[in-house]
Length: 419
Image 1 (tube, rainbow, N blue to C red):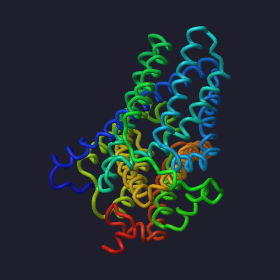
Image 2 (image 1 turned 180 degrees about the horizontal axis):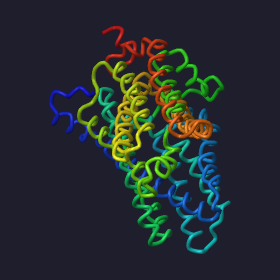
Image 3 (image 1 turned 135 degrees about the horizontal axis):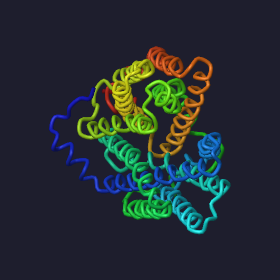
Image 4 (image 1 turned 120 degrees about the horizontal axis):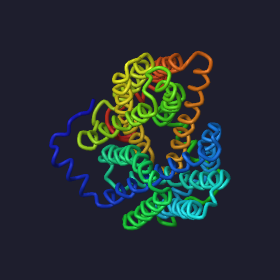
């Protein structure tokens, strides 16, 4: 699926020589490890205290709300102020949460309300951290290396998705205090590494004044650019239809009969596939026929989703989920690269905030949609309908956004027209 670079050693060294990006990659890995360890600890404790599955749903809802409330503010802040400061500030809130949890576990002061309060703090911090970090990553490497850098960023996230919960669960069996202390260390390391990342700050003279028009400029910028609008809405609708994560417990217990251990493997399989593909794309990036390849992997995503939905054989289900993760990683790298390259640096924060908000919304609402359809027609039908829907969306979007289908290289639209 990827075009092989002419000389692999040159590609590898060129990325590794980008010292600011290497520091940023290590910081991303450390912060994401801490985040997932914290998440698994809070989730386990909430369920242990209340024995109510609905409370687990509230965790997702509480984290979703800040992303809605702060989208416009986050984007404007990322375009107006030092992005490292915003990321450090957000991660400092993670540190505070780690301290609160350590104290609560140590003194027995843990409660449902305290845990939900920590979740709200994390949600607020993450609403600022993630769009800003995406924007910061693209400024640390030359334009022709953005897709490779995003692939490396994805590999850091997927490594943490695989290792973070596993490490958190292992340490939790010893003591939850150890988990929160280790999280504190991970967050502190990330803040320190970010502090050593050197970037070009936005001169005060070039910063837009805070007005309603400047705050909403990201929406206007996306709306009048078909390539940006197409790539962002494509992910929105595919994720709304093809969410399978929420239904994995049903498949593990009722369809595949593999129990909790099998459920853990099912949840890890997409991350394993995504990590492998992200690492591959770090060395062998997609360089030509970008648009067609993006639509192809979206269609593959839908087809593989159907395979998973119909599978009653556990090994096939695992392979299908790993393949889902792999093709999704290709889609993520292409989509995020297009968003970053199509957007000038002075607007990247606002556009990234919109993109992050819509992606987060589609994932959350997609899980709700899957559960709703499953309650009507069953889990298998829900997954198959979602997969077929993704295939249809890929075909419809190819017709609605021909400019996106014709994207050849990772270059701004104006440059491709003049090429």
